Length: 422
Image (cartoon, rainbow, N blue to C red; front, side):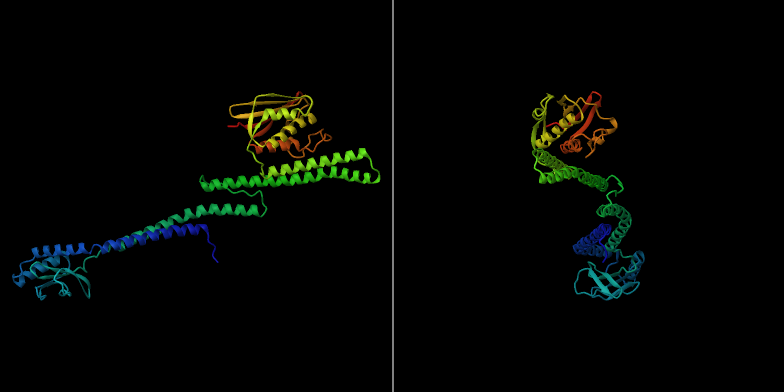
């Protein structure tokens, strides 16, 4: 079975459209011709009167009438016969045409072996038969159809390369989609031109890049999560075995702490997965960043809040989680006091969290936002390295961005920037 290629469908559409134009024009012309019969009758009558004025009178000698007929036949290069009112031959030039073959007394067309001829009724009742075969008969309908057919062929021939080029780009785009479907996530298509197909190719490449990054992120998250889950699970298993042998309140408290830690880790992993998949919760709340920061800061000692009244639109639970992670990170990896400051600009809203620790090395600025990453010398610090990764995901889910503004011996300052609420 022949595949229905897109370029053939487009090409066939062009050709059939042109053929339809040819047919419609032919039909219109034929209709117009049918309506022109009355006009032909007027022409025949007018021509008959001109011929009557050019010929000698009916009572002139046959020789004189023959000379006039010969002169007209030579002048117009036609076969012409003159008959009297009883349709008897008077004079002739060229091949014999014959008297009118119809009963009417008006001019019209007659048919004989050589084709159609004029039968002109003169005002003096004589008949003039004219065979136009030696004249080149013009067939305007056929000429128009021939011209349109030529145009159709020329357009069809010229349009094929353009149609093929257009659909060739679509086929290459389809091949890229198939490569992605086969698991080759690094597949990209060449962006050609500046039209809608080029825009589609750009969107495809962007989507393919996001898919590749998402799959890679999920694989890395799964691998790291599997590794990180082993430690609390091992402690829980050991604690359960020891409780079986000898109940101990201290050991039971440690076991509950391990379970809580494991639950928190699983919750963070699930939240990261949902944000990776763009499965965003409702983002329709109006959030007062200054008030939210004050609530979170009240949970800690040596944590101060100041700044402007700032409002954004989003999800308060996610923003609260991001602020809590930033403050926790300031106490775990930095040093007290930790300050939270909000400020507003004409287009943006900013919230900054600053600690007074030893800072982050500049070459680690990008790494600290990766899941499960721990900076050198921080391997024994409590946590799993998901805090700042979640902060980045939550901020980007709100169309914002996170950056380390300053980091050094006097501490680290991390700033979240969000679009200003209209």
